[in-house]
Length: 237
Image (cartoon, rainbow, N blue to C red; front, side, top):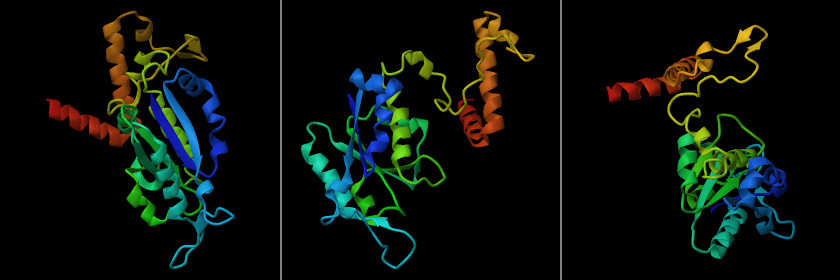
């Protein structure tokens, strides 16, 4: 079973997330677990302070290293068997992509996700983590939403979490192509008709159409991915 531990000062933000839809079902089936650690419990002084002003001046407050590292080390002391793989969530991290989700889903470790707040982390915290990830080139109020995104992306790859594991095979980003266009009923919606090939019953032609749809969509919407795809095709020629 894959275990997630989210280090945050707002654990209630994850309470609804863990009780809904396939996340709840995956937890109930013991495919994975999610728990939170409030690093404010390890804060400084009677007020459990977790932040302070930056040396050298500047706007905002930074998270101090002691509460976060003390929380991490407390968890590590209590873990049995698996090690804690520590991921710092921040805009400076490497982009989180599908290939990373796949590798994390197979990781033989407890995954610790460290959520920031305020203006960021004391730089020294980075010396105590295994990896730093970002979910995009934009700024949020904290790391809790990215943590939930990472958990959802990784957990759905665990066998038995998604009802039909075959549905994971042709998704966007599994290769360097976006997923092909898909249609359901009605056949005709406001004069927009489902492509005839999809109702032909000719499986080879359907697969060819889907491949062409993936290539076209990727070329239109994600030129960066399309370039990766064309480069890989040239290597295979």
